[in-house]
Length: 388
Image (cartoon, rainbow, N blue to C red):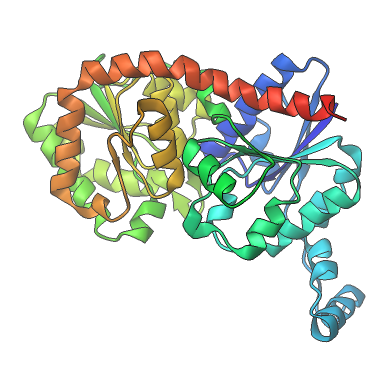
């Protein structure tokens, strides 16, 4: 079976890398002989994922002004309000690989959380027009993100795999009958343990991840996180390990975290993890932390899956749903408005600190079940073809 993964922006986002890396592994474990190919917006960044059978450039193409394609596109849009020709040209680097696939996996877990995506809708139509199976792999979608146009697009899929129950329940309520529940494949991601950096306290280091994305959504959040760092330094003897997880131009965790490092490095208790590690190496460090505080979903998944008590600086349904599936409640998850409240951050940290062993025990109970749900995604993939 030839499997084509698409809507992957590149592995500079270590969460995206974790999805591709872990998904490829569990598919090949459960489906011997399966070939997994990736279409990527930044294929050079994905060469670190050696299990893939092919990596292709899926970046957008441009339509030169006054070219033949530009004239046809303009005519169809202006006269018929039809964007399909233009969108087909723009996304031709993805579309040309569809014919060689048996099944196409749309792996952008939260792509539907960021407005309308007419180019993606066009690709989905072309997948189905070629008679290929189309699967939305491990998605999270908030009800506030839904629209009539998105709902029609979602109906095209042969299978939608929701990675947490909040999304699953919402899609069922919308009348979709092609939805199954699983868990994010990254819960099964392996770890690589590198040498611990100078200043790391074994069993007494708290990881902190913060992102430009959260900062842009709430400008006061950076000040509140700074106050939390001060609080940890003043009330505990722990080391704080600043942990980037997305290292992408214009969306680089390292840059915003480094400003904290420069301010607090002279305390001797704030260290900075490098910006050139892959997802398994970041998980190797996160797994050896006592606590973790994170804004990036897959950094928190690395912590959860290593049974590290975790506080989530969440900004979407995925953070809430994943926590609910692990704990039965949205535990230690702050929404985007709460993140700028220093007192709430300190209170949540205190709760995590005081309930450390109980949280760790709950994770030990829940994570094996969550990982089984990750593998269920492959079972659903197999069942889809068994029904043919």
